[in-house]
Length: 326
Ligand code: MN
Ligand code: MN
Image (tube, rainbow, N blue to C red; front, side, top):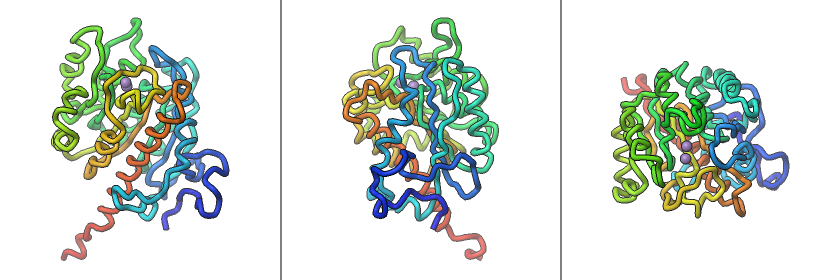
């Protein structure tokens, strides 16, 4: 049995106790027996329209107590293979983005150094820069796989360089992303100009709009994603506004005619055999949510991230060792 498991919901009802993600143990120290950690990054001063994503992590945790350890779609009992904890929240500095980046990097560095995969809950998308700084220190530039209605590659907004609309341009400038292996999916909605999309492409990213992915279909898109990323470390950044507002009304900059939750789950389930070194799920804004719709989608997408980690570990354990082959 792996060391850190969710609380047994046959012994205590799942609505009992403080809310940790999926009822995992609350442990604020990284240790080598962990395969992944869940951490909240409750920062929203990078938002340009609606604010309030600082309450995203608690909303996702609140719904996540319903998640169960056996994933029937992927046919795996997650905690037979991996161990994980709720690492608590990164102590952000409200209103101060540069200081918050330092806190994120400092909080995730001991996690990444121990070979543990961080899964961060947002918070607005500006936070990903801090995560990537911690990750690239260990892994070098990583492939970026981004699901989002927006490219987030502006140069500046209100003459400011750091916010949720500029995060991936800054990450590329800092050398944290291997653009030749990176891909964005889901762009849609009105723009200030065609350069908004061209900017991302000119930076070297492969970009698929929502209509392009819908025309190609999820299966075909998964082939494209795998071909683009190939081998080597990859970071998955999932902005909840990739989903249609019908499935995710609780977000900062909603765009109509987005993905269904069915497609979103099919995408993540199809991301097997990739070398993930980190994940995040951002832009959940509970004040605009209704009946936990957005939180439910977010918690279930994170559940599929965890499943991918379990599947990778299972494949590794079942691989015959070189010794056996000889
Ligand atoms: Mn975004
Ligand atoms: Mn977005």
